[in-house]
Length: 177
Image (cartoon, rainbow, N blue to C red; front, side):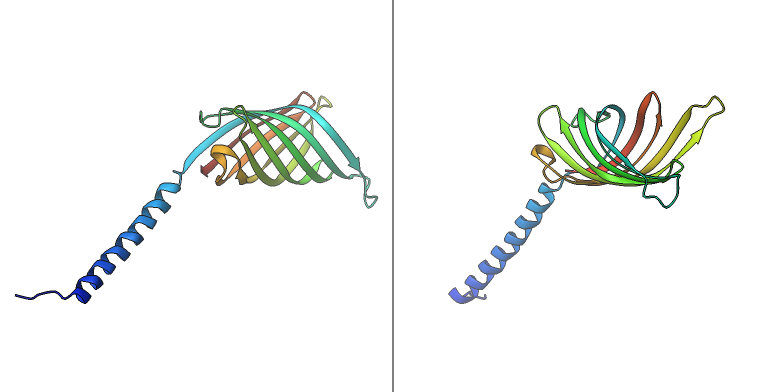
């Protein structure tokens, strides 16, 4: 029968402690990671806070716009509920067609916030009636948040329409928080 010395028993105990420590860290890491879920939303714009249009002079149809507006969003997931979004954007267009990008601060009913960046393209068409319609689409990314969204990560897509009556948008994102 083999007998253990104090030194060999100590080595076995240390090896077991190291393994348990590593398993504990792995469990903490996996417990801290949120589950990935898909969230959809619908958005309407409520009002412009500011808007500045400039023509850089290279082409009479070239217009650059810097805009701040407030939107209202309703989400499919009750964790998100609804939010009032402050949207900070810039666009660069030729005859109403071009690119846009910006940042959004989403303010949720419970006081939490998320911060996103986005970019996409838009195309404006003039209708036979003389009215106009601008279709747009793009991608966005969650940068960070507060409260339950402090560690939010994810990205998504959006698409919408702007007419003289206002803005409507739909989007979808895969998020983890």
